[in-house]
Image (cartoon, rainbow, N blue to C red):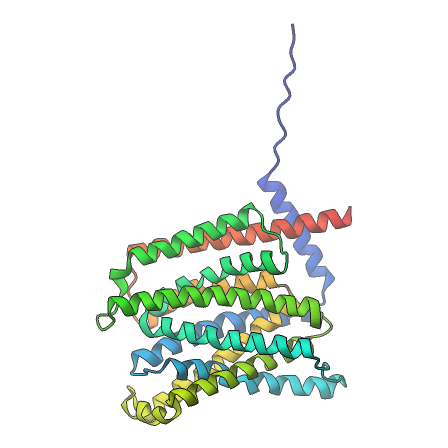
Length: 360
């Protein structure tokens, strides 16, 4: 008696997925003018290079004699007029009016500005006590937090690949914690090292929350009408963060301490001013690039680029600042790459399935 056995259909084919990615990429490319992709390229490059440089300069501030967490936090948002200078010509050239402010919008800006100020202060503790390569690797956990908060607040999709990336990146962070003795500076105590570790993770979590709330602000209150709206959001949030941080500087009397710091800084007053100035410029250029990517592409693209800068910063810190790179840290870096790949795959799969269902 002949029996026909049916082979179960395979639900996933890597070659099919590649072809779908190629097709969706081609369609996406053809749907926008060439100038759009040029602007997106430069925005992404600005985000990657400027944020990495800002992280290295923050660490350089502390390694060359800087002491104040408030000063480096204040510097991070003191470059907000740069974005304002880019925003103002858009009103004149485009003959458009600023977005009207209402109570909800002002409260949203105040909340995001306060959270940004707190986030910068948390990362300042990480830069003070951790090598730049270690702090950047720990900051990669912001990708996992962005996915979680995006799911909870904005109702973004959270599939198996994204969950897998969260687990992998969390494992990479645990490896760094277990290998703390290999990269701790001799003048940093155990309690300071773990304080830096703790505040780095907390800052990454808050960064993910800010990312999700910013997306919610775009969706619910601002919409995606034009690029000037994205610039307005960035100017207002950075300005309010600057105000909160300036109040912290006044209360802690760190403005008076800047003159003393400049005298004792390695390289003298000139080097001190250059480090702080370039920290302000690079951080604001990084934020500006991230805002442009968020507007021109998506929050997923901005999140991925924000994560890709982690290995760039880690490798640059090892080369330029001679950060220790143990075997465990290399393993953590590899796991981080793996987690990024899972996140990119999961996000692109969700986008492809969404496009397929909408076109059918």
